[in-house]
Length: 396
Image (cartoon, rainbow, N blue to C red):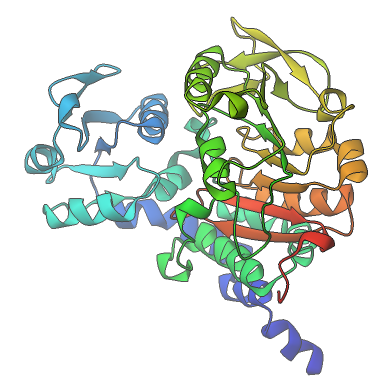
């Protein structure tokens, strides 16, 4: 009895017990789309950004009749997206609410879901429910997995969960499993402030001697955050960005810095992984540029951090590299064990990273204190932090 009670008080075990058998999970999974979309056979994609484009492509591969795209950006109204007309949400609802479902292609979906309902739309389908229904046509979809496949990884899930250092992380982990398997939005805790991403004040403090390695530097957005948090005091920044268009934007931003600051930033034009050599790369000039196993028109240089940093002593490594984070950790193991840097590793590109990344971080350096934080709705902008004991905020 004592053991059963102890397990029942554990957030993850409570969620697993609530979700029930594989049969009940599959039944919930298969019924979700029909409950939300009703008998509608036509679709409207709400959102013309990156997620909306992924959904539109998946809908077309699934053979759906996509009659319109809706977006709040007035500059897009009257244009087309991949041949589909773009209109205002109000016009789209007025025209199609009676015979189409509206799938929300926006990463922070609460506001657009509310907007559609207030406009009179009754068939509002979140991205996750759409994915559950059309997963075979959504091979490049980020962040999610079918619930029954999630529960098939329960042993690995428990292993990753046991690596977490604090109660807030364990509650978030368990809530993520609950939401991803039920779409019960009430299970999700409030997100942390977006301004704290990569540099959470409750976990560690930055100092004037930081040597930051920014893997996936994009246009310099996370470097801006870093400079704000350190008031411009740092030793060096290595900005790794393989996309040429992004590097131009990054260089433009860095050129705006004071000369002494710019001189302490090195731009490294490499993808980061577990090997040194050429890799195929999908270069989009956006934050979504990524390595791929598919043949493409572009090959770029990939480097292990152990190679790049053999003569450096990083104090902080940030990774936002579109799903390549596990490989990058593997290619940085010697550096991690030698320098013991803070790590901030994005965990939302692939569903299984929720439970595989903590174990990888602990394997790289067992004394790391591993924590999970989320800075957006649903499963987006989640980051794992690995903090060496000497840098843990006192009082945690």
